[in-house]
Length: 353
Image 1 (spheres, rainbow, N blue to C red):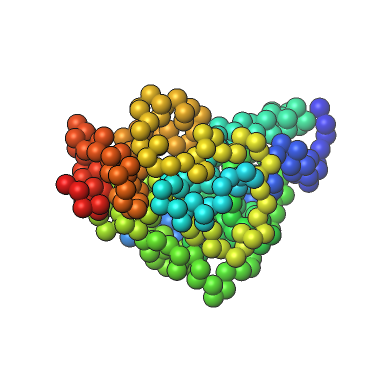
Image 2 (spheres, rainbow, N blue to C red):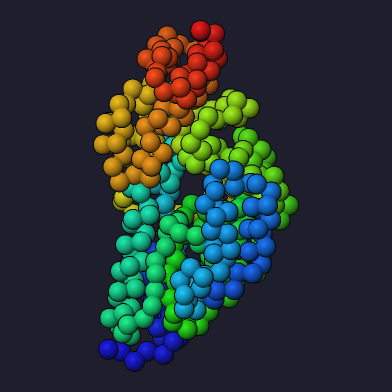
């Protein structure tokens, strides 16, 4: 067992994190008071929509020791996910026959991969210094991931509420290791480099970015297509275009993403040609096909019904053709009222009753 000082332990941890595929690793304390105020204001405005768990967990997110008693430090990591071999995002968005899937969801579900790597990091550290308390997270519990990463110096929270890094953009996942080790902390990101730029605000199809670092989830296409389990409000359907799972517009226009690097993870490369699939083909997948193809994918959790709901809207926004209309008609009389209603809306866009 090594006799490492806290500073040596931190250095060793960061070196191993890079070897495990994380692009950055930093350490911070548990004081998130400033971010707690921002969280409570966001909740009070109802911007979380139907995500009741956000309100239910409340300040547990901003008080790490309430979630994991004894937590003194948080190891914050990031991992790039933008795929090397995906079809050009703007080209897909500009082709109404194709379905656009957010770049983060084209490959394997990141939750399991990131947690496994964080677990390896903790186990390896344990072999060096002995037993210690820890718990790993990747968007899997009430954790203020972006706030923690900002405080740890991995970047700053941009106007679109995503974490930004001056030399790496925003195409990355975040993960955390809560620990009772009293490690030296890294300085936070002091300078925010967004300046007067409003590219992300201007580009949002549904005007969901309602202020600096203020996103009204009820208007956000990512929320509407993923978190929302009911009908998608009529006022947003046309603006959704061909976005069938998530939305990347605010990131696609961000000037800092010209500095981002493609992922090193083969598991994040596109599966099943999801980067440029035809809407009419995706709409024909049975529930069994949906579950089989999306085994190990983040998309599977929205379920087949909401998958078809989202595609129906995209087909309603597609260029009118016999193929598009015929595809929609296969679900026109669906026993599922939610799906039938969205298909009816889509057919009306093509002047078909």
